[in-house]
Length: 100
View 1 (cartoon, helix red, strand yellow):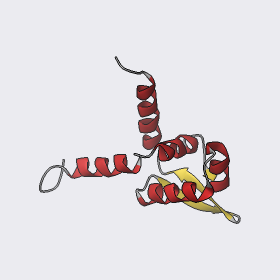
View 2 (cartoon, helix red, strand yellow):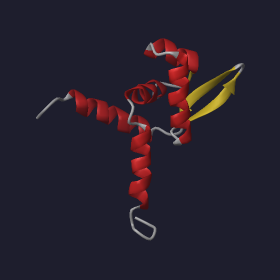
View 3 (spheres, one colour):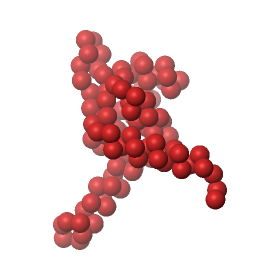
View 4 (cartoon, rainbow, N blue to C red):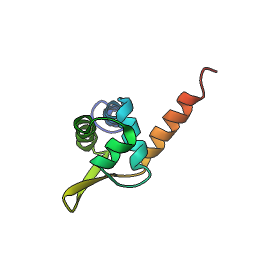
């Protein structure tokens, strides 16, 4: 922990978790864990409208979770690193376990 109050790392973790707080963003991260995808590929896979997928990709980009790179006329999105994919996979697995 660094900073004047000792909670800087926790604040960063909170920002990350807020960025992941929407189910569609979790689904996007899960898809991107398989490899880079263009918006139309995510739309097709998730069955969500293109404007909605684009809006959530903007949130994930702003949080530093995904990056986009030009692929011809499209932008291919990928995870910045695999840590977030593991967090999402663990959360989904835990949710599937049900009550203890």
